[in-house]
Length: 313
Image (tube, rainbow, N blue to C red):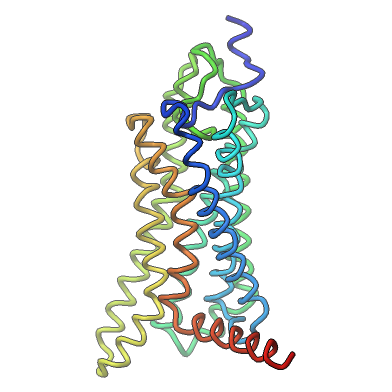
């Protein structure tokens, strides 16, 4: 019992129930991961390189794309390698590190989404004060807080997991060190931890979602007062890509984490985790470019310049 309560490693079951068929998942998941990495990297490089995109809106957008890259890096490469090996072992320390960065980065991404909503609120509802209210210093402070607060708040969370007694085995029924499967292995009383997790979800997910909803409530009210239909449509178009990200990001996370306890089945958790860690980062670059006319124009301009350079050679 003493040895089991302090395991030196965990076994990630991943998709072991599929047997040899799990190797077939490697190719599609690898393609999605690489496309997500390249797509978000292109967005970051485009925002940094083009001075027309040096605005608060695209500053936060660049932060969000960076977070998408980092979140996928915490879980997907490990999942890909485990699809090809029979023994899916992760050290105890490695599991805690993965847990810490996955949930810290995930919480940061929701706060950045809230920052993006505030930016749109100020731009549309208070356009004359936009330059003052959303100055460079303010944007840096908002983004800095969005990065710092979750990383600090997750320290006691991960330390509490590190000091639990794991006497129900060491097999985590997931492809990464998720919260609920870890708690299921513990023989310690986890009710207080589950309540703390719920408070953390309220602090980072629901609070940022509430800020986003309130901001867009004011935005819709303001836009509906615009007499010209074309101007209303143009104003709404600047919010389209952000709203799409909000619905995709918050939907799956609220479903899994914003409720106390560990009620969801392992298979449901794996499917939803795949959506958030593989599919969503893959879709986001397309959403951000296809729904955003300015980004599309900048990318098309750069593509034409590259074609011109090739022809000149």
